[in-house]
Amino acid sequence: MPDGAAPPAARTAYTTLRERILSNHYAPGQSVSIGEVTATLGMSRTPLRDALIRLEEERLVELVPRQGFRVLPVHPQAMREAYEVLAGLEVAAIELLAMRGMDDAERAALAEVSDALGQALAMEDLDAWARADAHFHRLILSAARNDRLLAIAEGLLEQTRRARAVTLRLRPLPSASTRAHQALVAALVAGDTRQAQHIHLRQRLRSARELTEILEKLNIRTL
Image (cartoon, rainbow, N blue to C red):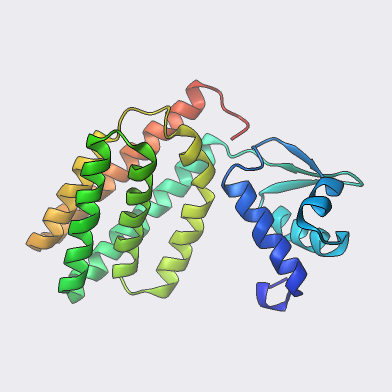
């Protein structure tokens, strides 16, 4: 059911449950009873059922008849594929940005987030770094000024949230990612589109390899 056609209560239930899943409030692999959810959200089973059907279609949950649902795992191969598509979309966004040229506001925004990444790394503040990194990627995607590209990319970014959050502290300090992001900004400002694309593609695929190798090594099948 399209979001706009769903009753308000079902939309609220869907939005709330989806956020709880993507933020790891409901842990991967966790089983949740309908009674627990109805008590927590204060709504009847009908809108919850509609919301869970949508979440099952998105492969976020598995419905358990007469009981509730289980949060589905995210496997390393799924993360690898998502990152590969994201890399392609962001390289395309860089091309579109270069074709029309950056304005002063975009240059300032990229410089600001580049500084924020460096400061967070220096302080070893991984939460601040993760926020700055997410902002960096959305700036690149938004600067393409292509709504369809942005919508597809944001959907993929949402799909990777759980794995990124769990592996953030299992990976080395993001020094390589910070250097790559700063080099990308420098290449964009200098007008070197091909270098910017090369830097970003290499960085995205390196990051994807690092994340999925951690998942495979630790055999994290509940992510």
